Length: 243
Image 1 (tube, rainbow, N blue to C red):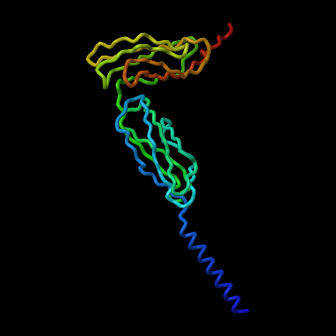
Image 2: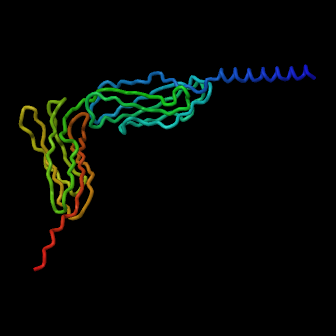
Image 3: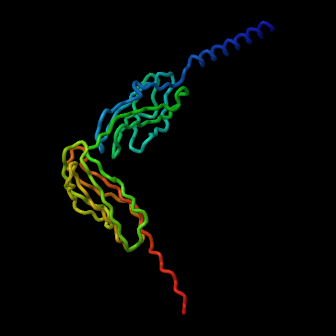
């Protein structure tokens, strides 16, 4: 009886040791990117860049991708799949829109995973954004304008990386925003001057619209100038005391 009990205990200890050894040998899911950094070199404003980051699940359990976010709304990321089997490859395809950014940029993509050694993987892409023209300002804040009143702002568009260019059309998407014909600037740098007039409107309203300037530029064919503000009620005159 005593011998049987000893054998049973020994077998139980051996089983525990085996399970522990197997657990120690299992490493779980592992995400390993071939190249977590990407330099897109040089592009122009209003251009897009698409790149595919590739990786492998080097672990021995399914790799699960969770939330994928970016440091900028200018970047979209699309995974090849949400679960990657052990030993299998996967990818994250990103599209970056340069918009009106300029000079050197650095952006990041964050991927939440079930890899306990790297629960939030980070991808980085950098580059330099050139300007064909300079739009000043490229956003107009009108503030608060009273009903029945109007305000006017001026925008200049100057060549930077081109010798000259032509404006083909200027249009507004809002009935209360009126644009002038482009006026050439006759100095050494050249360019154009555009006047943007807002109002008058006969009722309170919030404005968030875009003036589009169509050009013959190679890259920035459509320049977008954001116009935003609000129209408020007229302040009523003070009441007069009765005589």
